[in-house]
Length: 76
Image (cartoon, rainbow, N blue to C red; front, side, top):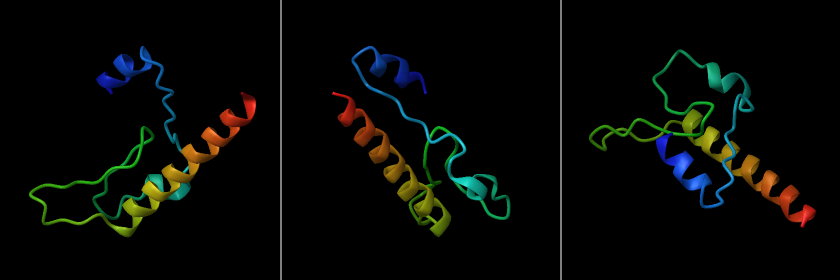
């Protein structure tokens, strides 16, 4: 999060996903990465692979950011 303040000074537009991923954001039955700031996973020593839930959140984030970019492109 600390890097975000530096990057916005250079023109980065930060688009967090917030709670738009729905019920997957509140999954408590398994260890998972990701937060309202964005998708993520726990890597550890590399033996753990991203779960379907984590991959779904990453896919959702990609679609969400692409939608925002499309709206911004239409403004210019």
